[in-house]
Length: 212
Ligand code: GAR
Image (cartoon, rainbow, N blue to C red; front, top):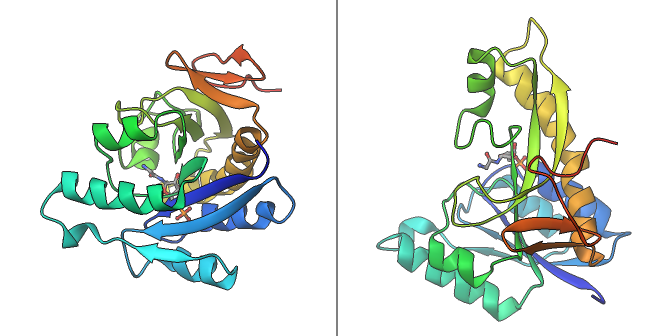
């Protein structure tokens, strides 16, 4: 792949977006556009500051999920990216959308998948008495937070941790993890085949790249 064109979808602060912007200055991908479903997302300001075109497609302007997904799909198709990166994008994408971009959508999730799919991951990790917690990057499939895991970053849970302290430490790890994975994809090293994630032509285990 010559230069990989990336579209990034956000809903909020966009600190992961920032980590990807920072890396893009020296990596083989270009962030072609940042799209938010929320006009107030701080990440839009980060993108504008970096000179990246932005677009707001507010889900509340559409009758249902199908219509929203279709508008989003058309906007993305007009940009024709190689990769779609969900970075704190808080809308569920329907099966048609996901299959349209199959193998080209990454998501970051604040838990060690398959543990704690869905929301309130830090609270639930604490409630479950987990000793380790973390973040995962995975390919998006129709199975919500269930697509093949590419890589994870782990932290130790401390006795005095709260959901907030976990969230902060996990987020710091996310900022290392996501750029690494996007770089792999942009370099043509990463793919989804037969429902599995492959790196350098090797199928990855269920929890992604083994810890080095
Ligand atoms: C991140 O922690 C990301 O893992 C999470 O939202 C946060 C966004 O932060 N994503 C999800 O929960 C998706 N289900 P950011 O806007 O600062 O990058």
